[in-house]
Structures are given as C-alpha cells and as structure tokens.
Length: 175
Image (cartoon, rainbow, N blue to C red; front, side, top):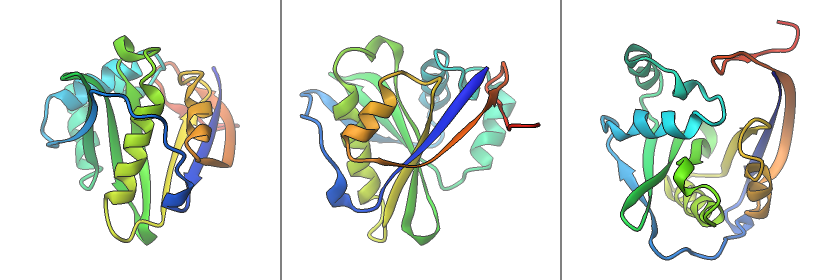
C-alpha cells in the first residue's frame, strides 16, 4: 500500500509548544527487559501496520540487540499503561524518538498532545548535549499524528513516498 513518510524535527528546546498538562498522565522509565515493551509496542502498532505488531519472540531479541542504547519510557494514565516512547541518542546530540504511541483504549481521549509534550520534554533532558529531536511518521499512522507533531513545534524537513508490504516492511520506490 502507498505510504508517505514525513520526517519532523525540533532544533531548540524553545521551539516546543507544549499542550496543556493532563492530570494523571506521567512518563516513567522502563527497564529494557520489561515484558511490557514488546506487548505495548505490538498493541500500539497493530492498528497501523507496524512491524512490532507481528514480531516473533526471536525477532524481538534481535531488535533489542540491534539497539543497545535505546531507552524506553512508559506513558501511564491514572496508573494504567497508556502508551510508550522510546529514544535513540545519536551522534552530534541528535535524539531520535523511535516510538511514540498510545494504546488503542487511550486514543481519542485528549491525551495525545500532552503525551507528546512529555515525550519531547524528556528527549531534551536525555543528555546535556542534545541539539536536535526528530522522528518520522507515516501516512498510515493515526491521522492526527502529524498535526499533533506540528502543533508541538516540530517542523517537517523531509518526506518520502513509497510502498509498505503486508508485514510492515517499507518497500522503497523501484524496489
């Protein structure tokens, strides 16, 4: 199926346009070996064709091994797991928000803007050397994802068009 991938970034913490806080919504660190990580990522991604929705246990082991520096954070709402954010700290102070998503039961409840605000604030706090926070989203993700990113101050710096296979693999144009 046709897909447009949009890359967005923020190059200064002052660019963050925070949403109003939602009482009871918190972002907490998760240990890398938490069984919540594959469970929540699979449940978030099932609606959007993410690869995490169909990974086997062996594929999760490989995925974790390929990203030893990735950190995981649990979004909780009133004590219940509501979503997840993960980050990779890259060279030159760039932080990639690898995952941002809410569990289906929490979509449409007015949490997205505040959850993204918490995620972006945490990204800027990961290291004193952070100079850029970026992520990508797909036209197959939630339709309010990209508008939310823009409302929080992230700016588009690149778009790509391609095809996505049934298992979530991105098929590059002409491949």
